[in-house]
Length: 416
Image (cartoon, rainbow, N blue to C red; front, side, top):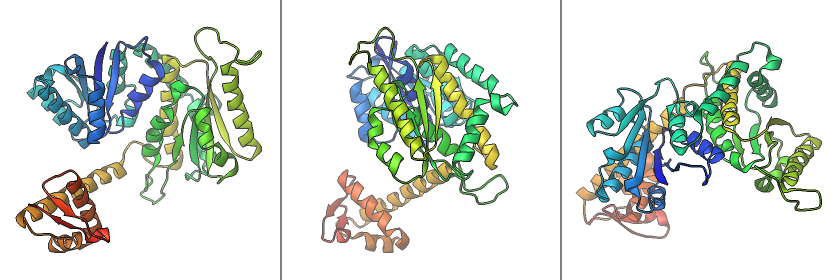
């Protein structure tokens, strides 16, 4: 079996990961997918180690709308270094999915990558699963993307209905509006009763929270909107939080996802007349009733089977519901100023780190605590930040050492 690593666009790794887990399997996958979805060096190493020395048989798909997302760029550079160390030309194993004319597109051309697949600049990472970002990984895995698209198309058609009662996305958005008092007063707990849908709550976390979590509405008024999302699969993982859901703080509504078909083929009886699937449904219905009896609200979505069509329908349903809910509360669901602010803040941190490194090198042999360094750099307000930077730099032997003191904030840092 060939192997493939995927480098994410923002949080869009969540879509391909969800689809790969929901529809794939060791007996059907043509290619096994691995994901670089963070800039954690140890996480990158673990993914590369899982390839078991088979980089020569591995296709890397680098996905970034602009090519400027640090996590994606870092993953690309780490992968390039790994291929080079193995005596391989990364470009002969790489495909870019990016905007035409972007930084990544230019890198792919300059380094003679295998291919380039375009994506629209108006499609955000969280809504890209049914575009090239999600469809290409699914296709090379061997999933039937035509069936996924057919399911999404069917949902798209029904969610364009102006008859609210026959429009599932409109109904879902109105349920959110009612359950959260139109201002995010309650969290959404997603409980799919199917192992294949385990990652759906993580996918929805980004789709819903990045889209709806906004400070300003379309009129520039401060509204602090959003719906927090969390969850995991039922029934096993519900034991981690169902006690609080039933008897704790009433700050949520539940979204149950029921799958009617248990498995391919017949099931054994684990008790007289009862199968494992019977127990799963019993836990689902029992949990739902227990919440209802204690005044907890819930929504139930039922699908017959986890198929490509059903997955396409689920993705399209929630994408449409997010857009409709955003219109109800008068916000823009399709920008992410908070994310951009976080990126700018991270860039500032890295600039300060370089100043700290340069200062210690300039005063090699001298020992300073974080307070002194901050004062000498005229960064008094960043003392705690500088202390954090110094500790990690020392832990990774980045050209400086630490003489630990008690209390710890009096520790001394130096470059030899």
